Image (cartoon, helix red, strand yellow):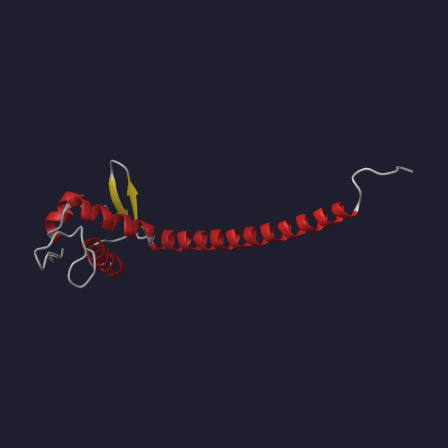
Length: 138
């Protein structure tokens, strides 16, 4: 396992360091490369605890937690409450990506349908306005 320390300037990692990058993003990038290379963490592997990763990389556990959330958002890990973070396998990652793309497409389709319905509603309202509300009925 790597023992890279992310603290290089002595600043707290809750704030951006000199190069403007947050420690959680740096740690997420480092873990991402280790996961994608398969050199340290294989699919299905439980990652070490936040405390242990924090000690290993020289950051606070809440920084590790933020990094894990970034990795979870990108589909690389799954976080199970009271159990830990686990590396997703590539099939799950690609399935998540496919599902996400389908949801984006569905959202776009719903937006177009909403716009079409609004246009139809305006047309019907215009037609209603052309007819008197009360008048002779024959």
